[in-house]
Length: 171
Image (tube, rainbow, N blue to C red):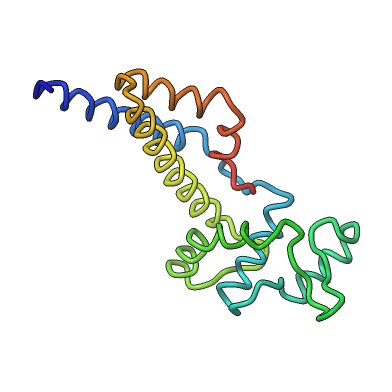
């Protein structure tokens, strides 16, 4: 392989990552995405603060008073605790950005904070970069030319529903 072609491949890979990062920064939401993810993040908050999956009792009570029963949390009749109805894996997925928030800010406010959006957006951009790099490398393993691999990643990201999931703080 000629020396110049290796440099060109790496250049296209880095251009792709810069493009994905810029798109992520420009199109990230500045406000928290409301709805279902709030419950999942409350379960993440409980994992970080108390080492357990169940949302705190006052959070469950808030949902019971303001929402239709079972819309966001479900109660376990065996132990009386309430859990996010979306499953524990989603709560685990938020541990990194919320742990960063807790470390830097010193607290994890109930139902979020204006700065939490920054941590979640940064996590989404990092996740986008990891997915882009993985897709690019997979395409290259199948002998795709560098520009074809980069085009493949861009098409996967921006012409599918993946784009929505990579730019909003949702589940």
